[in-house]
Image (cartoon, rainbow over all chains, first blue to last red; front, side, top):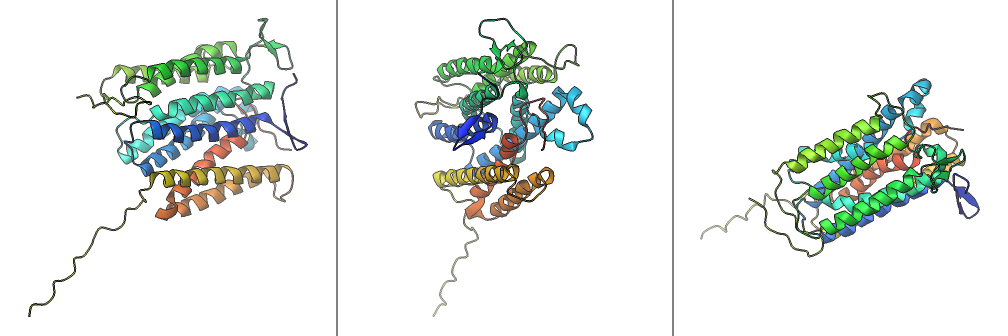
Length: 261
Length: 109
């Protein structure tokens, strides 16, 4: 297999990364609309919900770009004279954390106090899996591959066998989705599903970064690892708090249990 | 003869956002997909040299156009959902079409 693996459409070669990202974003959002109808809580009015999505996507954009800049600063600083280079680069960890911050900012602005993230969990998982296929098909250019490895499933992206960390992430996300699916069949406190998803994903990314080439300026850790640790710590802290006790019901029976006192 | 009673004045106007959930989400979806389609088509035209703009500054044109269109639509309650969808398509379009994952430096030819 030669990387990047281009798609062939009507005689034109199309790069896989933007194609898979486009499918990821649009498909993920359609899944969100579908799940939202089945989720028992409709606690946030529609217009406010849309503004939350605006907050999420702008937060994701800034978080993704800023963390990518910090993560690869050793490369970016060599091109400081060309501002266009700062357009490239993005990270999912930065996108998730930035999107979360964007939503919290929008909620603070609109005085919404309840958690709103649960309905985004499975769309985020599906979208990330699809996007990672694009990362894998892009190969070395994407910088999401692992370090060199002699394992039997290592993939040669063009410079020798490496850990296919994109595929590891897809497998992990599918397992996480299955666990969260089973977990969500019972009524759970509002917001818990989202925090468990974030904790699981950030934990995975923290450990997966050890088998990826990375710039480690912070006590042997990369910027993504530091951000993942910080995000996971926030999730643990919020899960241990019992202030947001409203039970949300589950996704399948269309009922809502009474709020906790 | 008593004068007829004065008509009551209705101070309450129509809601600022039409309360039709499915139609609103459909509008948001239309705005989002239209915005993304515009970005994709514009980007493809730019990269294939169909347009005559310099590629390093003309990326901004699509963003500025969508900001203007989205913000304008938001001011009209009937079109607000579409406007919000267009606004959402701006960062998503940038994430999809500009650059690869972290560490990759964009190169213009």
